Length: 253
Image 1 (cartoon, one colour):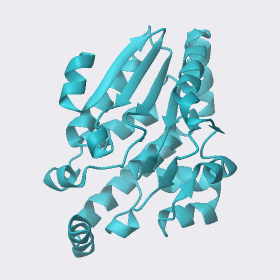
Image 2 (image 1 turned 90 degrees about the vertical axis):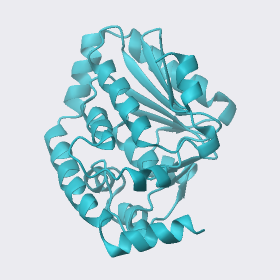
Image 3 (image 1 turned 90 degrees about the horizontal axis):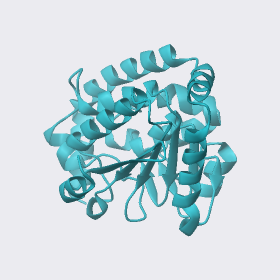
């Protein structure tokens, strides 16, 4: 997909340069909310980076001063991710299995999968206005992306419960304090800072970087097993009266 085609489709823009695959979420009018089609494109772009010897790092960012509002609810309800080959499932597996470093630049809202996907990133930079929220329970659902395993391991069980059970939003300073992000940088320097980190990674000995990431992420089997368990319960919850009522209330707001 060319940059022009992706921008016109309002999905993602993928650009390869200096050993970095730059993936831009490009639906600013919808706060970069993810559709099934966008998930499929993301899965292909990230999985493709793993098998591309010319790519040394992947940069993830959102257009229009927003990372992502999470799922596009209308599209989500029209194409619920219940099948084993659902695009969102392919995307999450691509994240978990990506052998190249993943660098994220987060500004504005990072809702739902916009937060949980960061648990698979190797470096996360945030602007001061970044806000992280995981309102799965509020929608009658359960966490995904192995966040029920990875988030407590990263921030501790009590803090994870505040995010995953209460749906409590945290700001950039709190995310830094909890270890969800690695640095908070001025908004006008966010993209350049994240890109510089991705470029630096891409310039390092490629195989050494890949093997170091493999050693750091040695629990992939547990991550994939957790994703599978979450997926089963998530699909069950999608069919529940609680979830239907929650989505109806959301759409009527």
